[in-house]
Image (cartoon, rainbow, N blue to C red):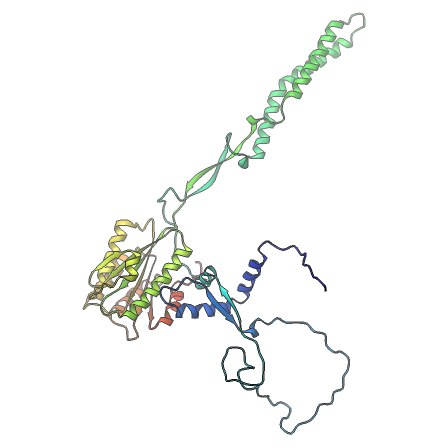
Length: 427
């Protein structure tokens, strides 16, 4: 028996690296499967992973083989049924198919099942929200001191070893050595000159005690020079870091949902799935985003997440009540100079009498001048109503910051969502 031992140096998480390489290679197939999974899932089942299948023919690898080589002579049997250029029919039955499980039983042919693997929750959401962003997100004015960035602010005498400035420390040490050794060198030079002068005298005139005294002084000065430390704690300098307030990228998303009597349960389920996608997208991709949930029929009310998705309250339809409430909340809590403001509205387009004109006026005069982006999805299989027509006027005026889309069935939710929040080219 032969054993093969792979001793190549590999990373600790080599399987994770290989898996990521596989996901990148077959991204197109996986994204197609993810889109289909999003469209068929229920409202409460959006965050789990997904089992993905890829046809075996799409993951086949090219291989090199040795040919027979040389010159060959082949005699092939003739036939009465085919001529050159004819195309042969595939074997019938499901046994020789692509492995998808379709077709009737057969006693001939062979094949392979599709390659299937499971995406984790994180991988699934990565594919769901790939290439999406909040449009026109800007840096706003300084607001909270908790959003700071450490910046260099010169040097200081106190600090931790990890921030030591070697160049400045060595420069200080060099300057200190020069300052401390200069008078000693001067005294040493004078003593050496005096000794040379005394030794150059006639032996009769030399003073032995003076010579011994000068030699002792020179030895003392040399020891003092050697005692000057190369570097001292006094010389150490550290990079000084201070926390500098940074412009805030905070944003708030207003989720406005119509819960009036004209919205059927199917319409409300579609709206909830749209807002659930939006909720997951914001929670996953942004740290500084707040969500404000507004439900409305004849009257609008700010609610929490639980009530927004599960309350059964209903009534007539006055859309302007919701827009007025959004305007009040912005004025009271979210200054446009400090917050990026977004609104996502879902409705069936049905509105009370001339209230659609009021909605247009509210958007044109109050909301749009302060908003970064406004999205409106109309959930209806029928022709557009007055609200859509009034919103078209707003869209013409604010074409880059106002978007409208129609959703007819559940399968339209994800494509519409991606279209509304797709990444724009940087200006």
